[in-house]
Image (cartoon, rainbow, N blue to C red; front, top):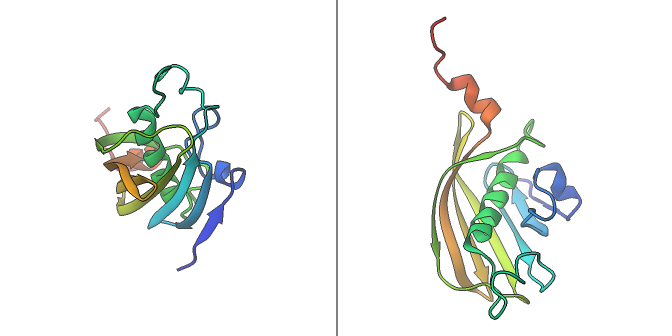
Length: 155
C-alpha cells in the first residue's frame, strides 16, 4: 500500500475547510481509505484562545472533535475520484481526556473502519505529549455519493 504526506498547501486539495476553520497543519502519512495521521500546532495566535478562556486558554472540545473529523475526511477524500469532495457529519461520540493548551502539538490519527455507499465509519484519537487528549467514534458522509443510495419517492 502506498502512503504519502501532505503539507499545508497540498492538504487543501483534500480538505475543503480553510483558515480559520482548518484544524490540521500537516498530514504526516495517509493511506487512502485506511488512515491519516498528522498534527495541529497550537500557538497563542489561534483565534479562539483569547476568549476560551482569558485566564486559562484551552482548545474548545468542539474544535478538537472537528480536527479528528477533518483528518478522517482526508483518509477518505484521498481515495481515487474523491479529491475535493465535501463531507458532512452524521454522528459522533467523543470523549475528552485532558485540556489542550497553547504551545502544545495536537497529534491526530483517524482510522477508517468501514467505507460503504458514501458513509464512512471511523475512529479518531488525538494525543498531546503521548497522552490521549480526546478520542471519538465518528460517522461522516459524502452526500453526493450517499444520495445515489437513498430511496426515491413515488412521483
